[in-house]
Image (tube, rainbow, N blue to C red; front, side):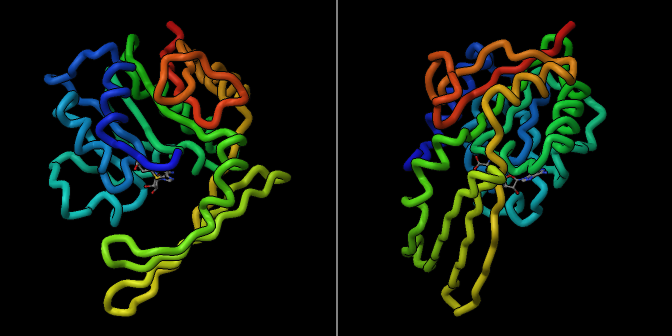
Length: 225
Ligand SMILES: C[S@@+](CC[C@H](N)C(=O)[O-])C[C@H]1O[C@@H](n2cnc3c(N)ncnc32)[C@H](O)[C@@H]1O
């Protein structure tokens, strides 16, 4: 995926919820990052709760919203059942092992209403292989210099991204992002093991059925009743 159009992405997620606006109930976004997607999702889900493990990401000043919670999505602190939960843009790939993935889907089971929908996308191996070279880059964005180094370790199935950001005042920020690239079919078994099932799995940004050769896939998960 070369550029991200969060407006289109929000429309796609709305379509996954059968174009039903949820105006009077809470919905939940896990791993919202700096809330760029939420900015557009709010039109469809005005009472959306945004959450992320990083407080800095959540507190970006550009998007004011009262319902923001800093938490780890594998142990979400909510005692509420949501009709719609989502997580976007590879966030699931930040869970680095199956123990975490199981904890996560166990939590989803507890957070969904009986008819509720959970949707998330996952980056597959093809995406890592195709984009590794392109993600070794440097440039300037909004006046801030950055360098990115990207390496996919296909033995451990970990994709590493190193970022070096040089702010206007000369301050240097360095970060390493580590993402696990799970096999397509692993998701199905882990989801099934947690009382859930995959209602649909699409080639991302379409409604075509996904397979293990896709770059990115969009899961639509429900509770097995
Ligand atoms: C690639 S960013 C995606 C952000 C956002 N969803 C978007 O579409 O722009 C992944 C996000 O996952 C968050 N994250 C990673 N591990 C997490 C965890 N265990 N619980 C909650 N958030 C987590 C990171 O802080 C980061 O904001």
